[in-house]
Length: 177
Image (cartoon, rainbow, N blue to C red):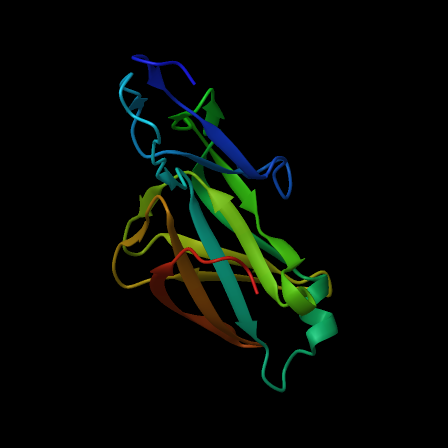
């Protein structure tokens, strides 16, 4: 610890990203910490600089769990390329498709992406599901969706052979269970 100096720090909750289209899961100090020489202890408050997206797909009677697992879930046209270096988050500046990693968490029950914080405007495609057996499904949302730093956004999708519907809600970023 540097007495009288400002510190920055990074914790790697998951040092590598789920795949090369996503950010790694870092935690950084919420603000630089100055350690006065008279302080015996220092409190560090860490935050997630990225946003987490959890995609839950309900195939009903149209698709089995195995069929859904074989599909590709992506977030098209999102900001990508964010990074953390020496405790400082730098926002991404490119746009691309983010592949959502399936089979994450307990019982491999989640599909997750760690992304740059951003908003997707009303009417834009929020999520795309590609079925290798044929068919692409694009979901739009009736209002802007904001993927905030340190927050999980849960996208609930009802997928049918004739189309899909989407609902979204924000939640605290808690460990995957």
